[in-house]
Length: 212
Image 1 (cartoon, rainbow, N blue to C red):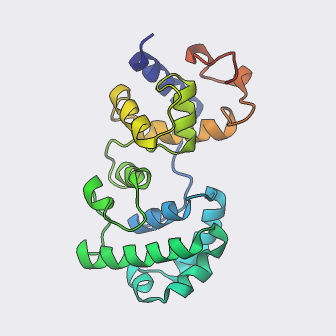
Image 2: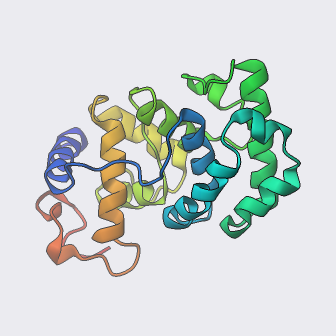
């Protein structure tokens, strides 16, 4: 089985196991997803959703972020960790969105990467979930499972994993594929003690039954 054939098989098995897989972060607008994803760095999605419930109510518009003292934003996101840096990024990103992009989150990688604190993982999430473009979000689950599934070998660099997956995934499926990897990584193919005996991917996973 080639990598591309295995990727197609994994895609179909994950679709059966997680038919409604979607981003775990809660949001209503394009910039809310952008900000929630920025807050998720070194923080769980569950914690981010708790924080953003109050944050989004306290700052309902981009103008509110841009006008607020950074200390007020810090106060709202303190439990997310790295809150000093994240608060500065949210304020600066809101200002840039208003001044340079007409208050709308960009629909291309080049402009997204210009925003403070935004890397390829967040940019890909925006492109996939907001704009429906082919996207590969290489978070920790995606990187770990890509190695175990043999799509890459002993690779930890997110960009290298992203490029490898783009070569073997159906572009139309790539964004949802990554969301499903997150669910599978949390529920079955965990970092420690993966539940290989209960894994829907066992039939095509080169790491089964080694439990790598």
